[in-house]
Length: 372
Image (cartoon, rainbow, N blue to C red):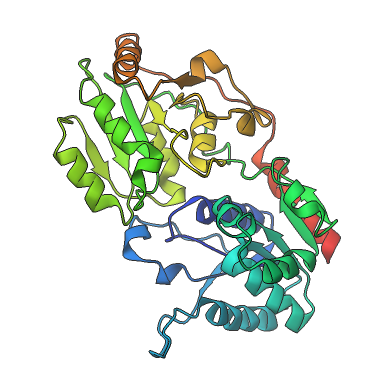
């Protein structure tokens, strides 16, 4: 079978890019010929992973769109025609059987157009922000309904299936992401003092990630610890200015890492900081998923919905999901100081997964075979 995936891909940072990387790799390892069509090389420097990337498996080929286009009026990046042209080239040269698209705009639109032109069936799947910013907001309604309606299959999850049921009956429920347990598992690394880490984008609206509250809380943590902030984005200069003007002393800033290097990054940390109360888009997180698979406790707030993950991994909530009151800085500081005092070299918990990466890849393959 030959599959063309039209999607974000490293060196683009983010959940969709990472999911696509691991799925494409898993498919290629099973002997599927995988072609990824992407605009990854055009990503803005603020969201570009500069980390070393591994060689792809033999069956996986990444095709980037043309890097430059002539200036024109009104000017635009023309991502849809650039992706469309490259995808048509790839499907025609490689006798593609199925097209998979991840994220509605522009990749789902491009998949719809390629399928309309060539007759090759396409699958559409989504992220979180494309639903919130476009589909739920009623933007591009006529176009997106066509994209969803004409897909051979719509891949979604239990939480979002109602959005698609009235548009396309061919809905398949799959996990949004399953980490590969060969790489994401509880390590036996021991640390002298605990390392807390935030891993994610630092956008213009960086306070939506409660990064200001993280900085405020950690300024008064008296016990020995390390704080690692891994991220980039167009809000990074403002955030850096914020922490430089605060009393935050024990803080290390680090750039994005390639998805393949995430397991080694997680080995360096003991607690993942992930807060959702200030975010207008509360959605599934790859990073939380990878942390839980790696046995790393998640420090979060009361709005965090752990059921997005407990369908696929058993979680001992009192040990692995530690909730802070972000609106009570003193209370949060006291709880963190207690966590540090009780730290004994490792915070890792057993990973009791009940949905394997191999099963996840096979379920995707089943969809491809059904739509051919």
